[in-house]
Image 1 (spheres, rainbow, N blue to C red):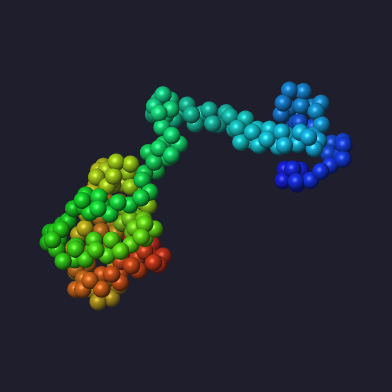
Image 2: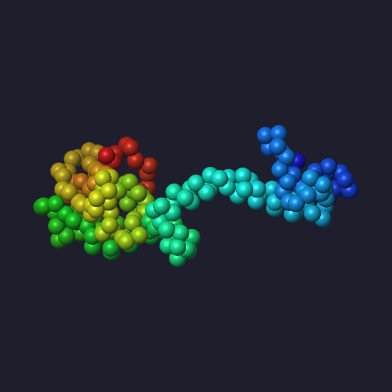
Length: 220
């Protein structure tokens, strides 16, 4: 009998024949004191379900959780963890989910002959400014391999070697066919063809975010 069925239905006295226990590996585990002597009924079934959930989500894996905590505290002292909310700690672990295009542009470098004044570079940032957040995240992932940025921003992007590696745009020759930008995600580097028109560049950049092109074009 599922917990959902138990909670949503009414039962006659002694019909359930379920006590406040769980049987695991031929062992009887009491969910509360004297649980082996307490029958589940309509009045206490919610408590029974709550205790079952608590057991399976906490007590059953308490040893494993303890080992994880011990390992975590070796790198981040417990007192430091208590400073952060769950949302703040998630941000530290996984990075920032909102892509700030102005900051991205500010911390981008260019390989000669590209510069921030180059026509193709101006087209590039203009086109990205037309993207919504989901599209920016997809393009960021195409370029860096991650949908998020470090908590300290684009200035702290890292290479696959763990070294700071700012996003860089490198010029390559434009080809008439299959001239997608080539992303080297290990180094946060994008090889951007020297497109001859803004519309041509827009076509290829939008194709990256509107279609599932990962592993088909460009990413290395």
